[in-house]
Image (cartoon, rainbow, N blue to C red):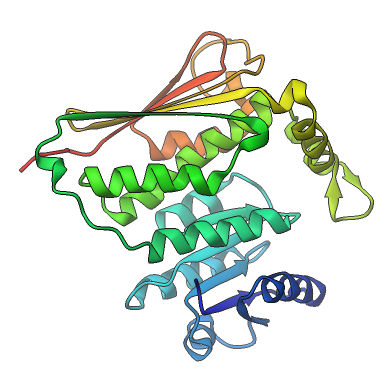
Length: 299
């Protein structure tokens, strides 16, 4: 468990809210504005996780990431962004951000993301000697929408890649962001049939959007909640292949490129496209296949 979490945020109310959430869940948290250079604040806080809101402050966000990467060992970071995809997100991925959260901030997402970061950075594992013996490996997962647990899926995926391939933790971190996008797309835009435009329709003030309200309702509705997501992880001949399929209506394949799927799957596909060597959809549009070469078992 992280001992010290630093939250850098200008908004006083948001600092208070996040402080209470983390403190109530057993974390020691420091919430502050950036009244000093980021590196100076991070060193003084003795943080082992940094959460920063970079809405409208892109360069300062990149400064934080560069600072964290220069520390030994590097300190993981979670950034809060205004949009799910833009050049800021891609640049943050290249600089090694652990994950990104989109406003409005959800308590469950925040806590689950922290737990996933803890597992990646603190999990103790005995490295298997099998990579030189096993020539291929396939793992199949299946779960319903209502049982979707991103942290549990990450554990299986992470342990598989780090134990049985030559991917480094940094490689895993980048690849996982692409897989996470595909999983969330399968859940929210596939099985639950949620529209991205609903995120801009606020209900009950600024804390709840139509997207969040309908998401909660549909997870509790057996028609949507019992729909399945299938995930296959295959490692063979130096290539990782991840297939994710949902039981939603899919989208009409209107031609090559990402534009055909933007209406349903959102801009997150551009993140996947930048991370993976290739990706393709079935004709219905409810199954994505992503591939990444890694030179498994190469001397």
